[in-house]
Image 1: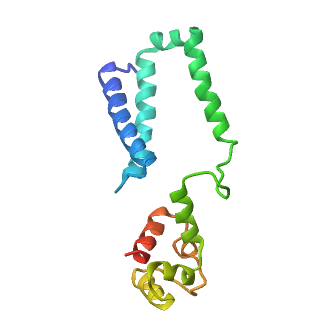
Image 2 (image 1 turned 30 degrees about the vertical axis):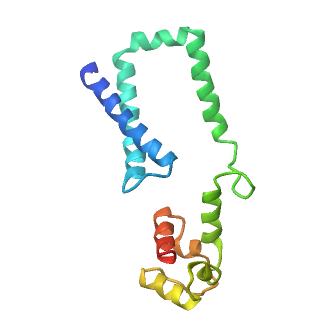
Image 3 (image 1 turned 45 degrees about the vertical axis):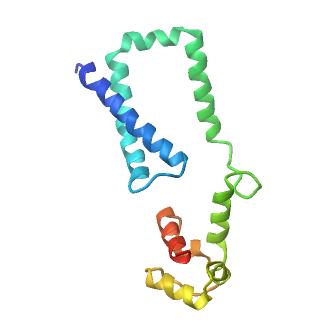
Length: 163
């Protein structure tokens, strides 16, 4: 099968625009709607586009593996990738995004402790959360135990708490 640059290059360019835009939005926590899901799923279009583009330009592509500077640049990214599998994020320490740490502190606190932050009684907050569809057995439960790991549910609960 002959892979044509006529579609491989536009596929790569289009996928890059999508991945770069959604990636930047997610980096700055400005993503909305389906940005994250589009980034994750249509990232496969980027993989396909780059693969097709490499096949369509195989002779040019091969030349980069003979250039020491090009090999060094590629090696840096391979090393970063390898390190990303072994280096753990400091989730419990002093490092990281303070906004994220504050959000996690609220999500992990008992609902009865969060209520005063929202200028509500624990009973009123429980009622609001239940009205929003969350199943709560006790005011001693944390929001994260009610919402589960899904960030969308966590933000929905936080929006109820801090209306």
